[in-house]
Amino acid sequence: MNHIKNLFIFFILVSVMACNEQLDLPSDGRITMDEVFSDYNRTRGYLNSCYGYAPKPYMDRSSYTDEAQDADDITPGSNYVVWYGGNVTATSYPNYSADGSPWNSLYEGIRKCNVFLENIETASVYASENEKASWKAQAHTLRALYYLQLIKRYGGVPIFDKPLEIGYDFSSDRKASFGEVVSFILQDCDVALAFPEGRDGFSWDIYDNQYGVMTRAVAYAIKSQAVTYAASDLWSDGSYTWEDATAINAEALSQCLNNGYELFNVEPSADIAQNAYALYFFTSSNDQRAVDKETIYHWGDQMQVWKFAGLPTNDGMERTGPCPTQGLIDSYEMSNGLAPVLGYSDADQLQPIINPNSGYDPENPYANRDPRFYASIYYNGALRYLNQPEGKKVETFVGGAEEISRTNRRNTRTGYYLRKFNNYQSGLNNNADGGIRLFRLAELYLNFAESAYQSNGPDAAISANGLSISARDAVNAVRARAGMPEFPSGLSVEDFEEKYRNERRIELAFEEHRFFDVRRWNILNETDQFVTGMRITMDGESPEFQRFRFDDRGSAADKYLRYPIDQSEVNKVVGLTGENWQNPGWLD
Image 1: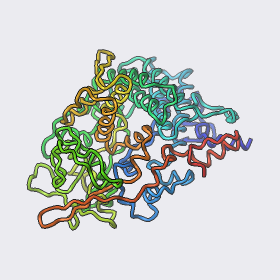
Image 2 (image 1 turned 90 degrees about the vertical axis):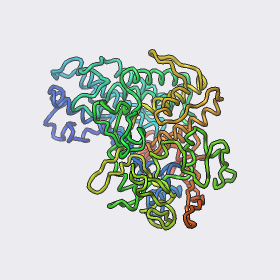
Image 3 (image 1 turned 135 degrees about the horizontal axis):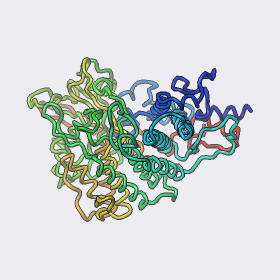
Image 4 (image 1 turned 30 degrees about the vertical axis):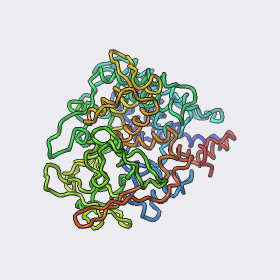
């Protein structure tokens, strides 16, 4: 019994004492599940308590990628000192990763969904059948979301589709394969999507007081991301081919486009943002899709970029946080669509191979770049305040107002600051910054492009629900919003892949995708070995540019491809079953 009790704790989802404050059974039994599910408000309350268990995306994740070097890498014992040093163990991982170790929280969310789905089937609560269907659809979609968040971090995990009874025999459990969990996710989403549409059903739309609820678009976005991951190098186990992924991605994209989703393309006034891409990231998505028709699910909190990733000249700023790397800067194309840098002639990536046809000038490196560069990066000479041509310019050069520093966490470590999500009007008395969308339409375009070029080539049109689109068309739709030229036709699969991966890096920069993308593509050891920066000194009025290299990162080792399962939980499984569930490389 002690062994069963231990594993009982391992899977929090079976703990009847958990989360009493959100309509679980109290310990004294004053209310039963029958009583919960016979009352309209209590039933709705229990469904509401199923929400909130997915980790919230945050800008700091970029410091764990080749997108950024964190300014706290000089703070002894900081997350980044330990992470970059490769000194994380399975035991210490929750203390140093971008979101701790969300295993228990996600399984708690799954447990809540399972309890709801089991009890709503026989509930005596008075509600219309369409409303009950909507509730079931939300719970199925939430459960799919939680499993997606699990597998993209841990790989294959145990599947539970109903509440577990006390005395349940955990020794018979096993980790399902990645593909098996994806099949379960797709099934959950398909069950949700089979319920009726409309205001009283499982809707595309968001009505009053419904911000943050699951919708049909969320179910399609979950399917799209799950199947794209399942076909990728790290996770592919033969369950899903790129052809399978293309069919599912085409369905997801076409359904969203046919139901009012579109890329945000609102022309900003000159004193608010440089372009529509910039404006999107600090525009509220809580508008019932009146203006923002791109966001599918906005789960991230409003961030304080000005305070925790800001410029030292901002009043109240505390630290610089994630500092964009020179490698990221090099990946932004010129405005003519050509890459400025074709590679590096040295192993330290300090000698760029300049594309002679691009128009890139190493003495004026920030001119004529992709508009998303200006929306995302503060660089030396960037206008701090828009619509003021003679106004304040950012000075990252040595001795400048926002100078680069090796020793101060309030100054850039790389020569660049984060601008994306940051409204320049934000400050001590007004936070107008934005947050990261968990799912948005641009990702669905890119997911489709990724599977379609693999399965059908870059230029072959795929038809679904009245939509006919190729991989190249999908990428070009995203680029058109940014004001960038189209990808040329006739690219080989290999050439398209190189440009596609760069496009995804730019469009989704600082939105957590890069962390998971380089892992599922199994290129972590290529991208995260080290990063570079740019030190600028002034010779009179002329800047002199010097690239420099940071120390090697230990976090590019293969074990960092996956999160470790909490070691204490692994030990419990070993004690009960003799099987070690720990992920590769994390055996402490």
